[in-house]
Image (tube, rainbow, N blue to C red):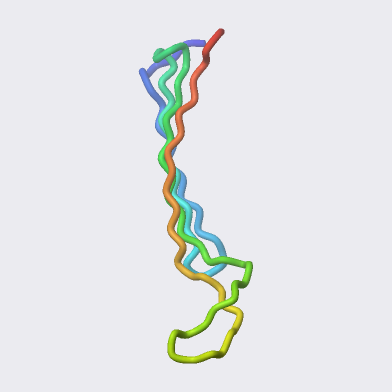
Length: 83
């Protein structure tokens, strides 16, 4: 394999049909680092599809509620140990 650059960068933005749900992914691949290494950074906002029991502090009423605007972040690291 002939590589013209020392690294490859992937940027992906996924916007779903559901209002407010967005996923950003930024990945970089370095073929010469440890025989092929990939770093990734992720960010996601979403709405929960599973209801939870909720209550207001000033009432005794219990109701089903769906969490909105949940934010998740993550990082990843992948490499070859043995080629």
